Image 1 (cartoon, rainbow, N blue to C red):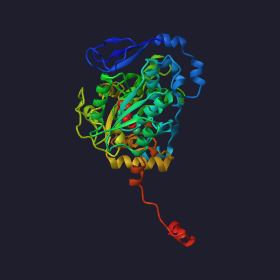
Image 2 (cartoon, rainbow, N blue to C red; image 1 turned 180 degrees about the vertical axis):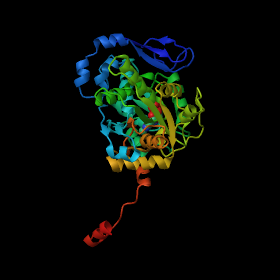
Image 3 (tube, rainbow, N blue to C red; image 1 turned 30 degrees about the horizontal axis):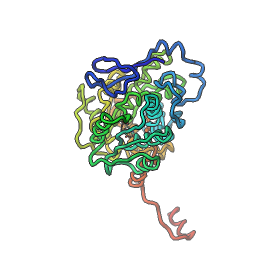
Image 4 (cartoon, rainbow, N blue to C red; image 1 turned 45 degrees about the vertical axis):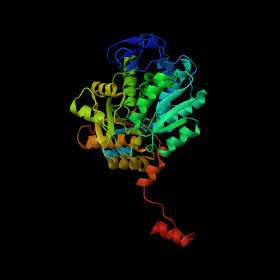
Length: 405
Ligand SMILES: Cc1ncc(COP(=O)(O)O)c(C=O)c1O
Ligand SMILES: N[C@@H](CCOP(=O)(O)O)C(=O)O
């Protein structure tokens, strides 16, 4: 299958064999462009309508020409959430729970493609900066591929579950005395100096894997498209990727419309929200992003230009929520629907509630909230926001008193 890289700013085109992450002419972000007529001619529509969803079900739309590095990613549940819909006041609400991926976050989709590309391009080592999930996924897919991985984390600001994954799966874990944005600048410099393949989402191949979230949502809704998709935004790759996936299904004639892309951030780290609300073409980076949702504690999202375009061209919007609002949504997901998520993921539901209450999202809409990471990723936060367990003497009297009093 033929594809090439194209700069979103100056339109410069680059061969798929080039190992670049941004435009060598203007430093703009890159997109992967396919020959959609060719794909349409060769696509097995029967397989599309019958095979169970997974990332590699859609391999005809993925830029990998070798046997992929896979640990059976994708195929995550799309839960219909009637209790939550009733509490929020929307007609129809689904939750696409990406925490049910093998490493517990949506990053698996990007990494199965990204690490496969590393192998295909002959790279021997992979690296990323991370707020946690990207590093966990890179370590695991690197181990599966049999190549070393290097991950840079902001010291003291990464959830325990994620650090544990990166360490146990053999990554070289480096804690940077700064935030994620500092770590990203450093890892980009390292990968410019050394033959190490950068697998943050500035690498357009990462987003090719993540666009399969859109394919699966459409697939699981009988190739219908929801009115709106609401999701957390940090480095702003995922909202870009999902928008691209829905656009590609329309281009191929598989679906006939696209959802409104709606990005949610926390009040302590919301450069995308501020740009959308002010109508700015570019974000103003935030020097000291702060939130308990450490996964999206990002002040200078690298994919901002793509995300602003995705939100605007889809007729979507962006909103911020407080940490308290996201914690309430985290509890509602867990206790009303049995869906356990890490803090950043819950911003999608918190943001939906806020926008419905404000009358910005119509109560008649069919909405999909994407929950991006599993509850087990951040056990410290979970325990900090829940009531303490009761400790009793080992007698039936003490037990009955604790339960029935
Ligand atoms: C759990 C979780 N949710 C949401 C996000 C935001 O995704 P993106 O950075 O692609 O905007 C991230 C990573 O940034 C994440 O780890
Ligand atoms: N939340 C991310 C931050 C890095 O973003 P990426 O889009 O470059 O992967 C993480 O989990 O590290």
